[in-house]
Image 1 (cartoon, one colour):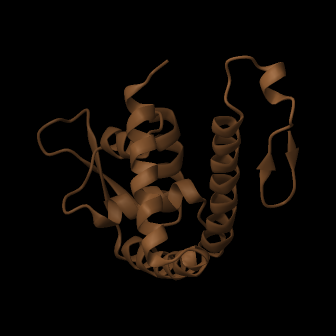
Image 2 (cartoon, helix red, strand yellow; image 1 turned 135 degrees about the vertical axis):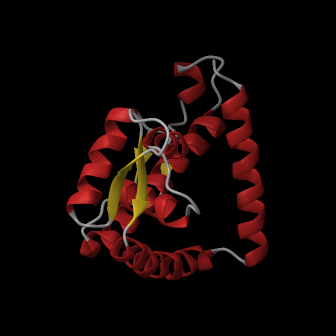
Length: 165
């Protein structure tokens, strides 16, 4: 397997070395991972000045967009992360004054998370920066190609979600 800074290419003897495997499928998967890594790095660079990681920025976005305070487990489910991980993210956001934990009105064992005004403002600020950059990054594709990419990714995501092998 050969990689330059943009793409991953599969060696010509791939099928001989990995009988029953598909060089095209492997190349596609490897390039998807490479693209995701590049996007996460770019987003990280954009949210870092706000004191956020991509994960904490996404958590803050979910919290800021919620119409009601959310329990930590619901935020964790939306982010597809563990409860321990969401606790760390919420601790970080709370230290920065972006969210607050509140007791649940009917279940004393449960907490609810709501954004502070500062958190809502920061979420709006960084999302404007990120979304403008996403428009620039994806300008490498036409609007039609972007739509086709979204459709293709949705099909792939469905197949991966259905196929637990």
